[in-house]
Amino acid sequence: MMYSLVQRFVHRFCHTLVLGILLFAGVAQAQPDTVKMLVGFPPGGGTDTIARILADKLKDQLGSTVIVENRPGAGGQIAAKALKAAPADGSTFFLSHDHTVSILPLVVKTPGFDPVHDFVAVAGFATFVNALAVSGGTPAKSMNDYVAWVRHHGAGMGKVGVPSPASVPEFLVKLIDQKYALNLQAVAYQGTAPMMADMLNNQIHAGVGSVPEFIEDHKAGRIRVLAVLGAARQAALPDVPTFSELGLAGFEDVPYYGIFAPIGTPKESIDRLSGALAKVLAMPDLRDRLTSMGFTVGHMTSQELASRERAYTQTWARIIKASGFQAQ
Image (cartoon, rainbow, N blue to C red; front, side):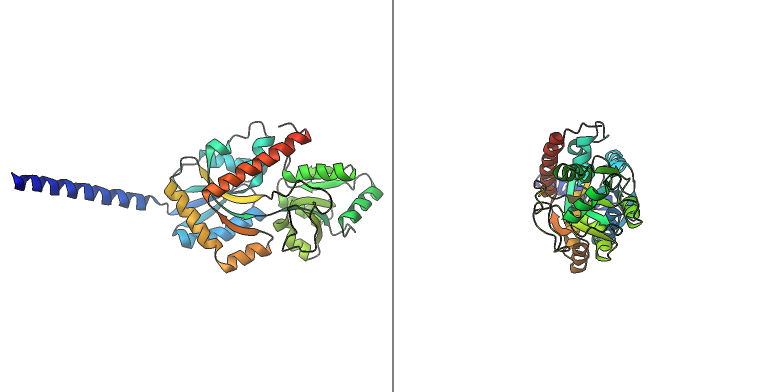
């Protein structure tokens, strides 16, 4: 009798142990061989460049192939909707800056996605600032020079390029215009790359975009950055004043870059990518490269990125409402 009970116990224990081993093996095998990183902007732009830099490093940390897939259009809206439709199995992520996740839902009536209910924050990796720059064919060396130049030449000289409509850069153009009464007009492009092409060819005399996308041409003298957002001057542009210094306050909360996943993605997959990203960001060569591009590099956990996204969205919800803008 005793032997039979012991035998049954051992049998059940072994059965449970085998199931546990099989389950663990199943979880391990469930890690995808290929990870897809969606990007909402065309190849060659700033966001695409960052995604490819990170993908190259992440593949070694993850032990998986990391593919950057561009889904350009509508300020990242197409890529965001693709993320919403993707399987929540840890195989698909979305690398984005603030515009798509925080701003689009405030300015588009039916964006086709809801960041709160459709996405889960995975990790953040950098912040950056927007800036006003002028083309090389514009004589302005400072903000005062630019204001005087526009006033002197009048109609046609007040056009300012922005990477996408109803974006932070477009709202900044409106606020600069309110301060200086220049009759500025925001000209919306489909991404920074075509805007930069027109600036470099002197087809448009000024543009608002991110420092990382301006910095190489600024250093080469092809464009000139006149002012930056943020609470302090940028390490990569120490001689360029902030808008706050110029009397245009209220833009100290800076944009962010982060990675998002479809809602329902297993926590193990989120933690895996977040942990790999933290290791990559600790690499001196990568940190130096991103810093030289105008980013402030720092790992944000899933919770920290989600908190930052909420706070940033609330800040811009107030600014957009105060501007009188109506969702399109």
